[in-house]
Length: 296
Image (cartoon, rainbow, N blue to C red):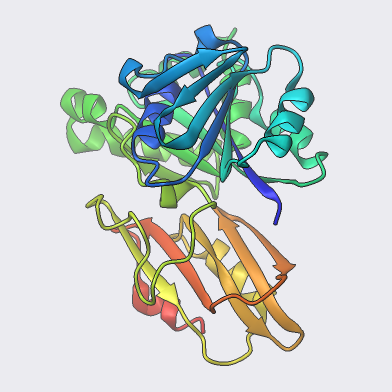
């Protein structure tokens, strides 16, 4: 199966480092590989670092962090050759980079799959930064390219403007990135299952990691009959309550693997035998498990 790669973008100070540290600290047995342009661009929490040698930082739990400089393709090749192979690659784009360009490079790599683009937006600063004529184009394009937008520092926006503070920023983001899922987070605390697609399928009826975060809900769809995988994937991508969905279904032509991230979906033929089940995760305030069960 292709190695999934998630591109993490967002302007300077949006909280990318905080998110990466949270994911590493809560890897739960998954081996992440984090790629950054330069080590100075990402400050890994010191208690997570086990060793640093030859351009690679070894992190507890089998995760690694590598600096790719100007050779992203070479670094991705190294990830494919690594033993044991990582379960998921995270690329932290620079604050002024356009994440879709990075994802395009990933898409050209045989053996890798661009799993999604997650862009962080500082609830306290994003509108002000976007009003700057020198920054506006970059920030607007970053947001428009996102599959999922994480609205960071939502607690600060709430303190300054109450609940309406977050609502105003969210409404503004919906204008800039129509159809994109927007998730308010504090201190980067978001379940990996809500933004990454490398998680293993759970036991029936329960998705891993979501219930540990009170803002998220999950369900596993387990159709006992053949379904139209493309139609189901499209319906999940169109459902405003679903942030991520992943799993296997039976079709008239055999097993199919469904990926949904934000409003984008993919369906591919599945190799080998796999248990049937599609994990669906989203914000509890918008999530309707009964509605999703009705799709199958």
